[in-house]
Image (cartoon, rainbow, N blue to C red):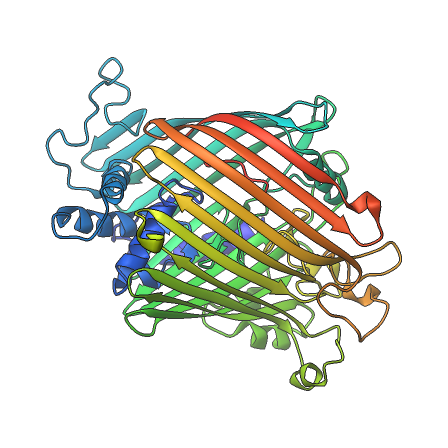
Length: 559
C-alpha cells in the first residue's frame, strides 16, 4: 500500500502537464515478435525501432507507425511477400494508430454487423475521443506424456481490452482463469519452489493439477513530449535475447511504475516494482513485500550499434518503500551505500549491433559483485558473482526467405542473484526474476524459426545446459533463494560446482492461423537430465501436444 501511495504521488505530480498522445504496449510472446526482430535488422539505421527494442513489451504506437511507413513504401522495399502480409496484419491489429483507408481493414464477414467488424477485434469502438477494443481469450491444450498415465492439459479462458481516452490516456486489461496439469518435471518444480512458473496464487486442481488466475492491467500517459509513464500490474523484460540476465518475464506479474524518457538517441527507463519475497505457502495469509528500483539507459551510439547501462537494487523495509531509491537519476549503488549498504545491488552492460541488414549481435554483462584481484588469482572466490550473455540472429538464412536463426549462450557464476538476506535475493513470488535456472550454470540455445507461407509457422528450439546442483549438506550457489552465508567455503567455486548435471530441452512446434489470431498448434517436447552419480536426478520427459488458442501466446516449458 505504501508503494502505491508513493507511485500515486509521483503520478499526481505529473498531472498538470498531461497533453501528449500515449500508447499501450504489445504483449510479450505476440505473433509479431519475429516480424519486429526482422524489421529492426532490416531497418538497421531506424532510430525509433532500435533505440528502445531491448525494453519490452514494445510500444504499440512506435512500432505501428514505423510499420505503416514500410507499408506505404512496399513497392520499393526489400521485404518478402510474407513480411508484407505480416506488416499489414500488424496494422490491422493496431488500428488506433493507423490512417484507415476506406474498407481496407473491414471484415468481409462481420457477425450481425456488430462483432468482428474488423478481422482482429470482437468489439471495436472508434469515436472522436474514445477508442476501445475488447477480445475473448482462450487456450486449450491436450498432451500425452510418455510413460505417464496422468492426462496433461491446459484450459485457459478470459478476456482482454485496451483503449485510448482523448488520445492522451491509454489503458489495457488482461484476465484469464486457468486449469493446468503440467508435465511431471514442471510439477516437481512447483512442489520444490511453491510456485507455478509465471503465475501467482494457485490452488490444487484434480489432485495433480493447478488452478490459478492470470490478471494484468496498466494505465499509460505522457508527462511531457518525451516522457511516458505506465502504472500497472504486469511483466517486463530487458534485453534482446531469448533469455535476459537483467530482468525477464519468467516470474509472476508485479505492481510497478515505469517512466520512459525517449529523446535524441536515448531511451532512459526507470522501473519501480513491488515484489513478494520467498514465502511458505500457508493458506490465505497476507504476504510480505519487498521492492526493486532499476534504471536502464539505452544509447544509439552509431547507426548500427546500441549500447546500454543497467542498474538495479532489491530491498526490504518492513513493507515500506525506501524513498532514497525513488530518485530517477542518481546511481543506485551510491544510494545503497548512503542507506548503509544492506541491499542487493546489481549493475550491467548490454549491446546490440545490426550488420548488413541480415545479422544482429547482442549481449549482456551482469555484475552482482566481484574483485578483479580475485578473478586474476583464479581461486574460485565465491563472491565473484557475474553473468554473461552472447547471441546472434540471422534472418533469411542462407538465402531462404523468412528462415531465421538465433544462437545464444548464457553463463552465470555460483551465488549470483543471491544475498545474505534472503528477502533481498533476485526473486519474486518464489520464482527467479532473471534466468529460470537461477545461477551456477552454462547454457546454449539454438532456435530455427520459419514462416514459409502467410498462415504457416514453425519453430525448432534446442536448449542444452550444464549446472552444478546443491545437496542437502552443501550450498554450491545454485539455489538463489538460499542466503550466501550458508556456503561451506570461500574458494573453489566454478560453474558446475556441486552435483554436475547436464540437461537438454528440445522442442518442435508447427502452427496454422485459422483466422486472425486463432491458431491450431502441434508440438513435441523432449527433455532429459543426467546427474553425476544421482539416478533420481536423471529423469527423461517426452510430451506430444495439440492445442487451439485465440489471442494468447503459446505455453512454453523451456527450462
